[in-house]
Length: 48
Image (cartoon, rainbow, N blue to C red; front, side, top):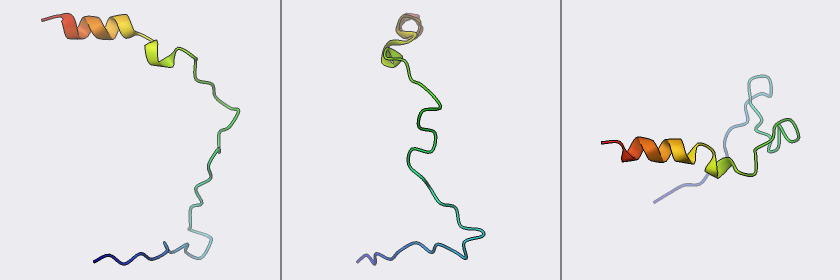
């Protein structure tokens, strides 16, 4: 059995509010992020 209850928000002074998009526009991820250093990483696995 499970009981689903809301999280306590506290008194406001100590409660942290998580905001989505907090750093929107302040950082950038390169388009080739998933391929960065791919050759170097592959070489680490190929060395035995």
